[in-house]
Length: 186
Image (cartoon, rainbow, N blue to C red; front, side):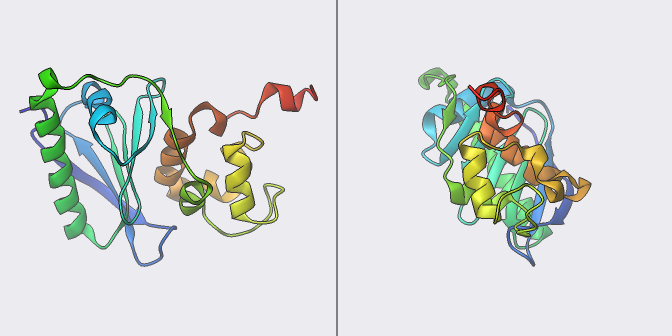
């Protein structure tokens, strides 16, 4: 057995869908070695970033973000559903690991986020602190590397760490630094 359990570490309110929660789980051991295998076999991977070792899966509704030592699941009904989802994820990790000899790992970066994927993870306050008229405009600007996550003041709050980390994994390097070319005026 690759991962004996994934414990429910804590939950937070889900900003993407009021009334739902984000479930944060901790695997019994680091899971980075299974991420390239999942990247190779799962059709719902929307981002794999080997540099920061993160894999983001689309689930209906929401996302599952996997990092070596933490799992985030958004838009979960309650803690019971979260525990059930963590158990199913543990089973998926173990089944994938058991079949590793038959899977060609996909180590290449994979990014296919859409503006709506990014928008769903933003606080969606339309506060304009970032300089954009709406959070959707900010989402598009993030995808185009014209804005950085740090420009969204509500996203810097401690209670949205999971959304921020999911966005960081989803967007890769473009999420944290705007293009040097754009800032230098080239």
